Length: 198
Image (cartoon, rainbow, N blue to C red; front, top):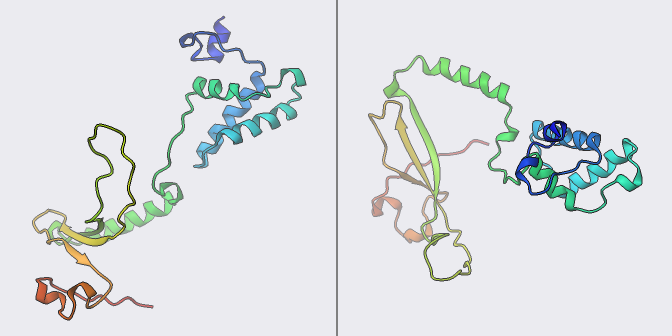
């Protein structure tokens, strides 16, 4: 009984004890999942089923003991606390060693300047015509097509926060059509032209 609990950490929380017919296959499968995670990759249900089929063949599991149905997958994931996660961002593509070297290089450069002379600039997007993507209603509402019009806004501040520039808009055209024959200056916008190299 104790061995069964050790092999199945969630067995006591389930209504019926989970029976593992091929422990070697299950061990190989969970090691493969962990190997995928270490590489920054995720597995899917079809991938797990195919891997189990291959492991059963390699470990010479008798045909009558092989799991041909798909019911084992849910139990397997519950036992090892495997959940579906949505991947965000692109952090998995970052070279951490190169980032650390560059961080140290930047720190050496910044050390020569006081906090008030260290500036940070960021861009963000504003969707002025986009409606909220959630809200209150008496029933489920169908979603309308998103308004994709976007304005790029720049914000800047120094390290000790003694100076903060007003947000400014970043555009591509020297004379945007929305201003018609007038320039941005006539509408109260300060303009700075940045020329890209290459």
